[in-house]
Length: 320
Image (cartoon, rainbow, N blue to C red; front, side, top):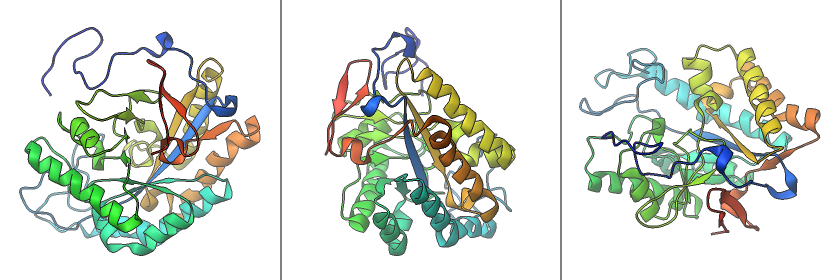
């Protein structure tokens, strides 16, 4: 994106808004923290065309497990890990979330939506909300796309989730959090109302698309198990402690104005038997230590109530 210097910003996708200057945000029941848990259900292609841009790790360098993610080599290791998540790990994660009364948001890519009906049914039985998540883990949005190509990509992803679930998604999480300068406008034009790619705040905020209404529900990298655990080389015990202390910090700040905590999970990582216990401990800790202070992020941006989503201008979003 071209650099454009202005007060506090170098782009115009959303207004500059320091959290200390905003009106107070209050969650229902005076909860200090709203919790969202996003679980990615995604397919890892073991081969992609040689010209396809592929994801890199957040720490820099290629992400492929055995082949460095190079398009010309089949990445059976990466495929197997992700498939483990869809065959085994997801059921452990859903069981833990159900135990603690947490309804997940499932980010569903087109490949999974088209070919994994069992996972869709499992998510529906847990009451999950489904959001669109691109075509597949290795087919990502990139700057080489024309606006029309990206538009077709987004439409195909949204349509696949709608076909699979019977409901048109209103949320979006880009594979690898990738966007172009066109993405927010294209998402809003297709009826997407919140996007999870911008990890730059502790409150939801209104973005400024040309048409429609779009909010950011960002995922901070340190609350993403792939970034902090695998790429960040933090042990699972450190991740457990980090997530608890993150909550402690925003719980304290939430006495002044409400905060949002978005956990971002991958079944092939956190769904493994030696890791999932730590997810249970993180989910249980706030309820044990604080007497259940969390407010679950409502399904479909409001469900039965109107919630303030943009403390900068007192905007709100009602049920779709």
